[in-house]
Length: 398
Image (cartoon, rainbow, N blue to C red):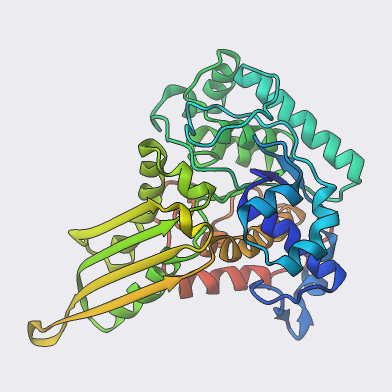
């Protein structure tokens, strides 16, 4: 698994978690597919899906600190976990990243690849992927984007519409091509599955969707569905099934990790709000006029995010009711298991020869990709059924 944003809170939590599983310092709690069986057989054995102990992790970050130092700064792991996983984390240092401060102004660093143009950045990422595959003798490889949220370019930019225009844009150093797209293109070109766990615009532009389909490479995204939006996709279908009209839904979030810092930039925040805001209307089947979503960076909270919802409902005889939800969660503890499972599932899709947009992975995302731009399913229970049916499909072989 190659990770963009390897030194971030989610990635370091994922790497530490995999190491703790390997050495017996933790169990599989919180990993959604850990106990799954297919016809009474463990899912890894039944499908050929990679086991947790089989995952090898490397990747890029603008901060070149080793993962022990990074994890210590993020403060997600407790002292015992950090001590147990520390030796392994200390052995991993991120590769130089293909960044661009114009797209993510609040998260910078000096561990930057010496490649100024978009084409040169692509070449550097492709070289990293080839080296990683060869040095670790990997049977399969998936690239997972866990980087900070970028501002969106104009989705209608000519360079993003066709594969040919995108190729020309790389050669012309077209700045409508974002760093996330650099990684997505490089992965697809190398036959490496791509997962976008961020709200950034990446493999979901027409050019890269077409490129993935033509290369037979699986792609999935975007924006991991972890806390508040996950709760919305559980509650909203229940309200609809009971004919309770949602008159208003006020959501606010406070968090103090690096992701929260990135979202202090208005352009990055707008990218995030676009993925969070589309879920509710799609599930309910009507627009909620008073749907308010706020995200505020609050440094003292660190990774201990708090998501608070005030929901106003109208029921029988026009009587009004309220629901309030206060989800005091751990941002990276929710996200890291999903990133791990997505890497395993995307590799399984690659084993099965299924390229292009992986719609069956919508369960993981706030804004699931669809190959034709159609409105995706958002209700969590329906998404789960689609995913589990796919997993239980035909066995795969490398």
